[in-house]
Length: 306
Image (cartoon, rainbow, N blue to C red; front, side):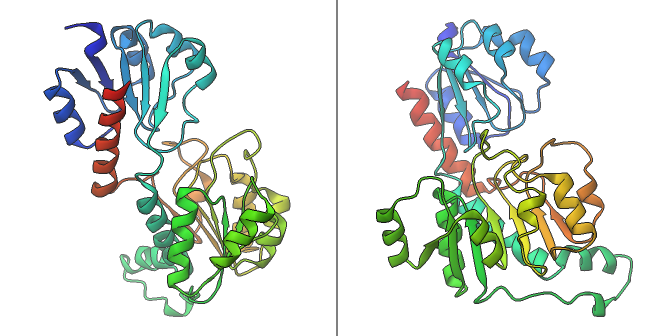
């Protein structure tokens, strides 16, 4: 089998991707959950690697991939790939950012419901036959102020869902202009500075990529601006919300609750897990059958193209 036909897949993908690529005579090695050390040992045998967020492709491992031609991200973020090094090595890198937007937006609202009504906390107590209804007061989300940090494909889907609840939609974006502000205003989405958004919103959803200027974007200073009964939802990347500062605020109930699908160090214990006013999920934003099938179809097209 020619080297250019060898693909390694290191994270779970929809089976249709493997099936269709094999039909086109690609040799597929499906190794979800492979360890970094094992991947380092064999990466030189492949021309294409398909991954999600389970492993980090740093400079060292990219340089070891002597035959790599394509790095394909089966999802949105590219922060676990050393893109400058890949470019230097003339490796084509791409992702499929649009295909999971609906799934991530729906999860954001699932987390919001769970946090605002203490669903997880109630479930945990009830499994011990503890019926503490007086501790279960929460908040409605209808007609409240929803602040969205980042208005990309996911942020726009979140805004659309928010409108269906009759919510007032506020957003903070990096690329702002008078034209964009007027356009969004016609859609009843109002652009604010980050500080204004945090002060005004009942619920804040973080939906931005992890970059140098977004690392620790939500820190103690920013959390201090939020309402006492507000809820913070993170469906973007770990590291954007400072977890130590968030823990301190939640512990003394300076904000009502927080929910996160992402963490700075995934697959490790986190002190946020100990709190009753947190809802936590294991980076499952894109984990729907529909999203994974769309991602698979789009990835196949891009791989064949390049």
